[in-house]
Length: 459
Image (cartoon, rainbow, N blue to C red; front, side):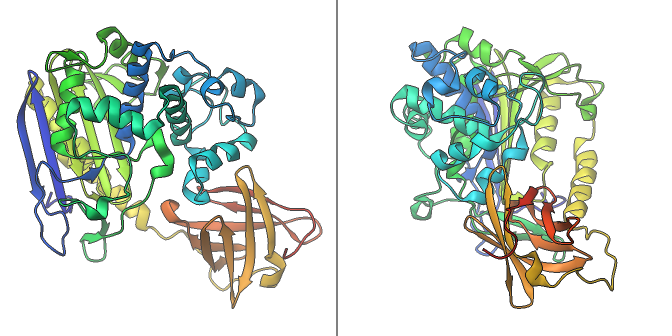
């Protein structure tokens, strides 16, 4: 933790179906010094996706759904920019990340500020990022749609169904699907961001990702997560009761799409695929099911070995240390499996530092340039598949307004400006001029490409 610069961490290990290690380290908040313990609440981010898949399995066991139900059956207003995918995409496709859509649809969620229903409505104009069922494309938005489908089939909504069908039976009493009410809870970790200038973590606000639904808003503790692992690593059973049929769990852990080679794990890994809600690979001859999670100020990872009663979970409250949970999980796997024990911490720490440097890097800049046109000429409305953004001159700078977000742009070089785009960080925004000499396009790195609405200037 000292090497990585993280504020707090909780670690739980299950072996032969029993919790053999459960402990907190560091602090919930560097300003108050409150200690982390096994019951400290953290955001688990995308590990939520595994809960959505488990909920799907529970509802399959109930006979309420099939993995091959089409999404439109349970979410009638679901539509994307490809009519065939709209009608053909199934729950299985969404849970295995093979719908033809990937992370490039994330701006719908993180920039629009809309509800789940509003986000689904905005999807109807988005064209596929790759051919349907041809490969793997990690999609938060499609998992949100899957969650809404499951909530509809359960007749209770995704949030209620997860609480009733997973949290409650497992005794995960400090777990939730929303940040609402966290301020009234005790023993809650504060998110932190690693600040390179001070070489340490700085408290930041919790990010509200409730709108992601099935894709990412669960909060939990190390103790609660070990209960989840006990059920998963014991073929779906908890204290002799069946929460998930073993054959259904096997379906979740069956490879559905190739997820690409993981060169970091050579020579211990031969395959890397995606099941339904789970990242699957072999490691030293054993099949590992895992998932990681990342939300501003929080990093997490869990892994388990099906049918063995073994698993591990790591929760942290500092980002900028993207690979720390991974280093610990791999260390625990090596301790359990024996054999060669690579120095994962050193290698991943080097990658972590490189990641921090990329985040802090300032792009090349040609100094002494100026915009081609007066700032007022760039004003107007610019459309992209997710909606319309407005560009306005405010004082001596431009502002981009999209949903609840207002991004101030400073001139960078020529017709390129720089602004801070929420979860996407500092990005460059470049205006392109048409043959008429007027701006007709706006391209923002890691956000998207916008076409100016016909009619010209400020509207």
